[in-house]
Image (cartoon, rainbow, N blue to C red; front, side):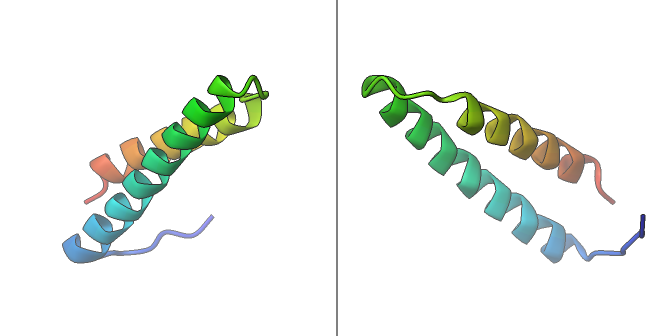
Length: 60
């Protein structure tokens, strides 16, 4: 595993990208639920994105 150093702007950009993907996943989960489709894969992706967002919140 490598350690990388990021600027505040780079961290903010990554957080914004992850947040945007979270919003897309939430929309996809809602649509899939309304149409009776399986949302387990989407829910797993959402958990992974939430973990990434939380990790970025602690990044320095």
